[in-house]
Length: 68
Image 1 (cartoon, rainbow, N blue to C red):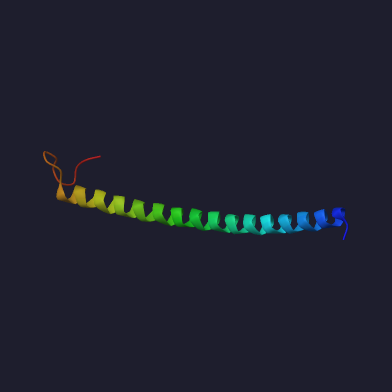
Image 2 (cartoon, rainbow, N blue to C red):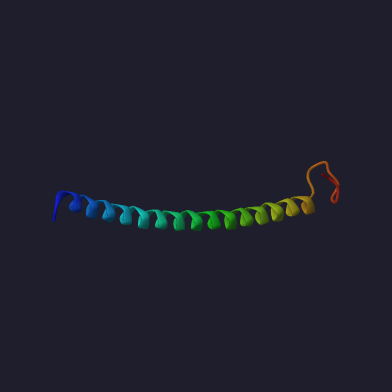
């Protein structure tokens, strides 16, 4: 095999390897985005639950059912 042919083969192997890695990273990034969105929803639900618990318990000096 000539030097040019060897370089072409090496280049294509590198290209394919990098393309596969890019696909893996893109998939992982999408998975992480979904996990972050799920975490955001859980945090919002917990914050709302805590806010509701605080309001139902009443704050010092604030009548129950009033606020905001």
